[in-house]
Image (cartoon, rainbow, N blue to C red):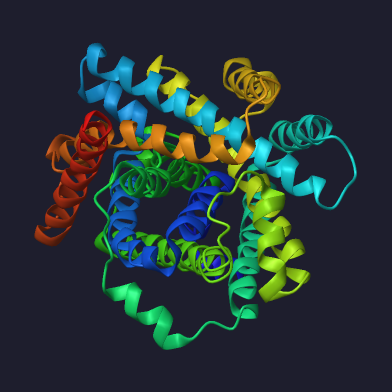
Length: 412
């Protein structure tokens, strides 16, 4: 069953990391069901950007930042690497804090201890586990996200009350509303998602014996169709989950006046009155499960970004003793992310801010991806079609517009 789901399911699940869960839950709590319209809007954007990233990895045979290094000057590459790695570290730190807070609901240990233990386990799996083991583990962890579907259904929402705001947007022109829109876009289109998807395509080709670049170059029309299906399935999965997170909190927290989420415990406790005590465990299970999937995606993604930016190679197929740089970067990023949790920030607020930070780094990276996937020197005959270009440029424009609108709203 896991094989049939394809590679996109891991990317889709990682996109619903604890940062995203915190952002979507905050949006539902603050604005109720009136925020549900963001889900169908985001689906189209999520699909096109992940598909473009997958195309680069599959057709060009290298990861995204290796491709940017080959095709653009250093003054373009360097800030992109810095932005992406910084975003990965902040989001990994926030996610580790979210996992610690969720575990604290179930295990009576201090959150810092749980954060350190979680990071140690995750790094141990990356360092000691094979790529095939990590891939299988990730696919099973993705299923924990269905806890949010169950939590929402336990609240017994009225279908008519839910469908109306899903397709009839209720937009508020104020900084608070717009900041959450940008945060939702940013966390759904996070840079680590592109990095992971492009490199996952390369890793999958290495797994079937295509270790040389010339063996990975190019893709048939049938292979691209399969990639498109895999990405679409993964993004639909991710989108359904984000929809039900907003629904679960929008139908419980918002009507009860609990519009501010400070901790994971607050979000879980607010679900209990209408959805039952089981909602606490469902919320915790979702954060913990997907956190164990998303954090290694971010730390490994940062390692991909740095080694490719330096013109070096790195792969999860490499043995740690054979690639000290790649695994050393994973270790350093993990340690820094853990250390940020000892600075005293609130995990849930950090989750929202990490989404906003991602929102500012997304537009320029999308612009580069559009240029790369329309270049015959990069993808040969597999340049973007009319509809892919239309959706891709619209998505790039929307991300630029959202970020500019947020900045203007701060001054006005």
